Image (cartoon, rainbow, N blue to C red; front, side, top):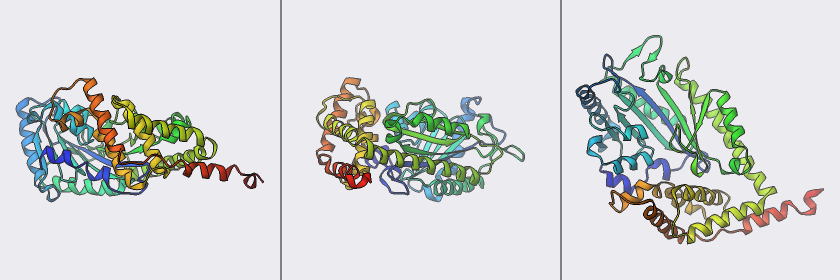
Length: 373
């Protein structure tokens, strides 16, 4: 598989289907592993990193599920190509900064990816559409077991898997779900949710993880504890919390429909109008307006068959995807803003104007005298 083929397909985690698909963009489980008696990448010499890369990459490529996979050393990829993989959530921003001695391998559906010599010798992840944490854990656990029969991982009988960062020691697992929560943001409840989640040992982060902004009303919810708790227990606890957040978002949407239908219609109409006619738009503004359009799809104001087109725009309008699509290594922010607006205008021509009768009818019914008795 080539990078051009990756660009042509958005990946099953974005265009697939899964439980709570309207709110949960994706579920992901990542495992951190290191080779026994080898220095961590941050302390290793170049020759040592290259040796680890060769051994780990060969083992990953031999996995049955990686047949025909994309496999490349990072020094062979341009900064733009690496940024494309970051925007696809297939490698981290930190890994994109690496060069000689680091590599990446991913399967054809883009549901399994392996970062070699990031912070740890190996960081592997499985990602699927919707709330499917158990499924993605089983996928990555199978890959982990397959690799463990060929690679000698650093493991302590008391501490568990040893990692470069102490916070990952134990299971070495980070499980997360990316949630689309526009109603909680509009109703100013998001800070309350974040504080509640933080108090029970989970983390809420932005679009690309730690230290990033929650653009497009997208939030990653993940575990923080990896030591002293088994993987199934972490998954079960995270699942329960995410299901509660989903319920809060669903309730917030109902409240907006019942109490602020005009405001809701105004935001959706304005988003559609701006995106349909803008000739220059920044990445941040585009994501925030696309979030409102996506909410409109969820509320049946747009045809359901347009859902995938809207979701794909969250990725296609990112800076590296815009430039890579035209094979342009360098492009000014103004040029990207113009190209982004043109791409969105073209896509929205396929999507009819929002059907406001869906909300107006509902609002009129709920405010009728019969319902006040």
